[in-house]
Structure formats: structure tokens, C-alpha cells
Length: 65
Picture 1 (spheres, helix red, strand yellow):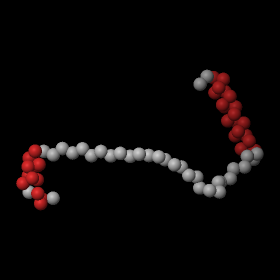
Picture 2 (cartoon, one colour):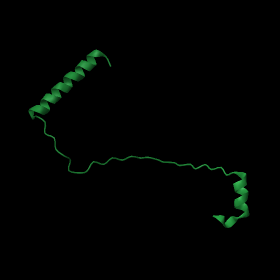
Picture 3 (cartoon, rainbow, N blue to C red):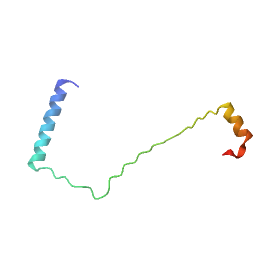
Picture 4 (cartoon, rainbow, N blue to C red):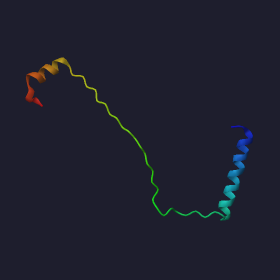
């Protein structure tokens, strides 16, 4: 941002703060609850590696688990 833009933003902030302090702005809570929709897709991938010795032990004793 350039300097003139920052100066303008500062002036706007000071003016809006003055309006709020002066009571010219009325702020009320909404009648209905605020609804925020977040469409999130969570994908989980499980990768496992089994040692050959453990694999043969499981094959020899299928009832172990």
C-alpha cells in the first residue's frame, strides 16, 4: 500500500471511531443466529506395512486376533 492510501484509511478509522463514540451508530444483536457453512472434506488414508515374520506368524495362527 502506498502512503496516501494508508493516510486515507487512518482518517476513515478516526472518523468512524468518532461516530461510534458520539452515539450516532446503533448496534443491535441479530434476531436469528449467525450461520456459518464450512464445506470441509476430510480424507484419511491409512498405510500399513507388515514385517514378513509377523505376516507368517499371523498366517500360521489365524485365530490370534
